[in-house]
Length: 435
Image (tube, rainbow, N blue to C red; front, side):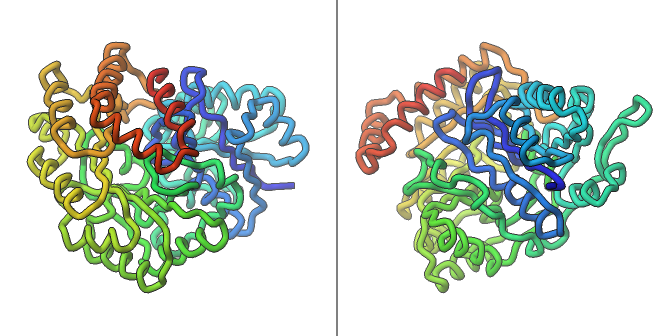
């Protein structure tokens, strides 16, 4: 018998199929861009490396619901199940585990996720037995060793007992996630140069205090880095074992420690590992020398959290960056031959019709290859709530950006470079309109 099942459920939001990003960000993508559950596979690999029998089920790739999951657990028994929840998926996640537990009442269920870290009470009231608050590796070991009350949130005598946060001190001690647990061939993105793709996390944490960002809820404010040698070892393993040519860095501040980012690029070049990649960076933490070396090492795209075109809103939400820095960074990225993506948030506290216009004006004025306009998620609540007006505003912004003739032609040109992606483009457009 297995000790635990790591479950990647089918992605749903309000009952509709979507691609849920089940990691610290808790984001949402159209169903046409499935997101690889590398974090969950990493936890399963960690449990196995720690001496436990861990099973992994990607129910999303199989299109399975509660009935099939319960049937799987009857054939492959495990006394416990863990899934990573998000703001968008919590309602559907709770409905799923309630149905599974109705068939298997002795099953113990664990939830992890930034949203349940903020407030574990709805999950515990909805049938979840334990909630991991924050980074999951060390509390997971407490559970597997039979000491769940030591660090996991739980109910005791009708009251909620909060969990204790624990972080991995040395990230190089974590094993490389076993991507063979998932069907790597299904993960393709219209943002990428090559397919399929996977993700990699070379650091954890962020030193900044942006009021709307969930990163520190899971990883804390201190940035912890893997050694460049360990990062490149994982990249080589991905290429050798899985044959995945596109590897995207999830680090929020990949270029924050410039010497570390340079060393990773130099290690990639020395090892002669050839792959395409993209990453996230801050607008005040890029320069031409670094960007040129990143491009030589295979980088093709930088995503910036531009957030808003209103300097007043940037200041109010502690972004510690300026609109002018955003302009300079995007133009710099384009000048060295890289693609630039702008990430925007609508619905920030203090948002007005004027600030929305400022945000759209900024996006339209910049030479961005892609832009994503997202609805604000209140990271202090476990569920996602939004207004129809905000959803409509977000949809209008996306249509305004991509509906320009020049941008439409650019999309057509990109599709022609990889005709296999044509269905994904249409499905993505339909998914944006639905969500």
